[in-house]
Image (tube, rainbow over all chains, first blue to last red; front, side):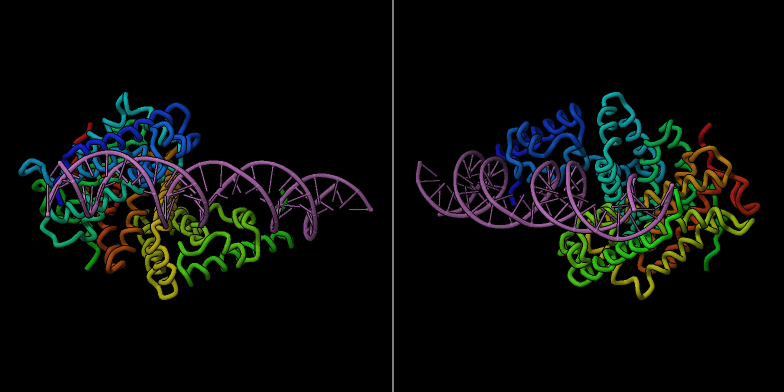
Length: 207
Length: 207
DNA sequence: TTTGGAAAAGCTAACCGTTAGCGCTACGTT
DNA sequence: AACGTAGCGCTAACGGTTAGCTTTTCCAAA
């Protein structure tokens, strides 16, 4: 188990990047469905099997930065300022992501995704995985042994916020609309954790 | 456009059922991934093309009742008792579904789904479609011209509740845990729509 | 330095879900 | 009685993905 920092690792990363670049170029030129895996491999000058050694599926070629979002979400929880409330940190992170997606450079890629059902589905299941990771991070932050239902619920709500905001006419306004709802839900789940005097008398109908 | 009620329609329905039955039998016997489409078609004694004329994809063979859940969710909104609150009706519906899935007979099929990533993904995207339908129903019920961000948010939260409850150790307890959170979110989105005196001072940070 | 191991990349050939194209038969309608 | 068409079948193929095996390239221990 040595740290992979030699020429080998660099070459591997280069190959991966070459493939991702070639794929994105072709997809943007002619559309995702119109370009086959074999073509992408040829354009990147690698074998098809090599391509699949770097990416688990065709859709993954488009979501190259996949892991960054997951790390961002988890990091928003684990590396937030000492006494910043959880939900506030998550809100900042989601807002940043949404802004990033609405920015100029990201527009063609977003169109690519929205025009292909396969890519849309893939993105959704990606986000679900991120929700699981976030739930685990929330549990850890709260000192819980494992992700409880409340953690998982909050995590999904946050990921939903991300998706919904991006689909909205005015993404930033949508974040401002959704996060108060999440804060209220959070206040019910953890009474006494939010800002003092916020919402305490929850509509508790259960035992 | 005549109503399809003749022998032809009956035969078509019979073929469809024959295929679904054969598929489920084989899948339960040997596992979803271990059975090919060509095998299912052979077992049902139809051509592969006929199978795909009745089901849009292999996964759809397992989610034969797909539309029932969607109709149930939408119906919970449109056909609820005159003055029953929206969220209460949705809670009843979700609870009923969760109970139904936890029942004896459904266990083998659920195991089938949970053991296959393809089926899990398919179920998730099914539920997202249901969320869209629910959002539209919510908008209609509220007299809105189209599904706003709030409608879509609520719809997703409800669908999340369904998924999360089913994955929880104690599904019914999970529903009791999640729905108060949804009610709080709802109260923030529509202040003055819930039970009187519930939650009024929302943490409104937006304009 | 040599040598051995293993990771990275390649090739071929296939599997499997899915679709297109075309023909046939049985049903429903006029 | 005859026509239109829905349902079904067959063949062949396409496109994503994987298995099996060989070759090349790097790295490290001897």
